[in-house]
Length: 493
Image (cartoon, rainbow, N blue to C red; front, side, top):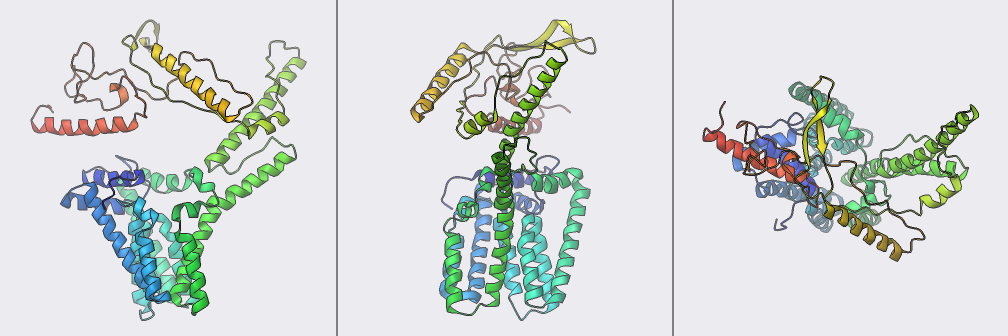
């Protein structure tokens, strides 16, 4: 509670709840790759108690406390008071709970999954009672975090094949599926195809994080909890008979471990092993079926460039054979050179900025016309001399780094005027003088009073960092100013 920083992923979902509380619609007014149940609940809570990091953190920490108590209760059924105390403390003090201490979906899903586990290991519950509880807990858990379906499958296996409670198992599976289908239909009716695309297609087809292909990815996330968990299992198994609660926990952890290993470790490694085998045989014309990770995508792109080079050489030779002397043969390269240099090459990129110059502008071309016969848009841009000097300085430092690192050969492209754009900024400068600017400090245009520009066009330079967060902050401020001006009647209908 006293840690003063917010993890970036916390901030993203926290912002979603705030936007809901302000009346904005998920999927339509802002991107949201999950079902909106949690944001609708927290957003309405914000309307009552006010939206702030502190109110969100109190809610999140209440969920952490509830999950810790449930962890203690479940562990009591496995190994006694000492085991339960250590398990609850390890959960409450884990790195993930600390890192996502303000607001995180998994915190709330964990409460529901633990509640379902406690219910499943309670032998006194009837089949009907068990069905109602499992359906309620896992419908809400999956609506908060879709991957909650993994522990749900574990609980169903536990109740069915292991405990022979087939009636509760089948009923829970069917009713939970129906409930989730109903929720999906309601949200699709409310938000349209954007809900389906962002929640399902984007969420499950997006690329993986670079760290996700590392075999030690679970250890990176869970730090000391994984080895302590394994040691705890060994101690419990060696000292006492396995209880039903122990079997359920082991089943849940086992299935989750299988899903993580198959998604983040096994498939990429199998693909890479296949690529290495083909390369060892001298085959470079490879087709890559799996490019979900940045590493494999980059690898595929690199060898695709080799393939394109070979095909370009073949095409040039074919043209020469027909007597076409105008073709250009690409520079010579071969597989041995590529195989040797591919794993021995490093690039250093530096980020500068573009200082503003008064003559940089957009205007109408006096001669060139567009498809409708109107004057075409003309951009006038030259780099500031200091930007070019900065590029030369940074390139010199990069070459020094390579020299110290022991590079056998090093080079850099010539420093010259930019011929491309990364971030679209400028053209509508902010200022007080209508003669030299387009908008005022409120993002309101000088000439059209009801027009507000809230993008990157007001920035005459990007500065050192990425401009996205600055644009976002200015848009929030502009929204506040628009609200204030409207309340004072200074914006006409």
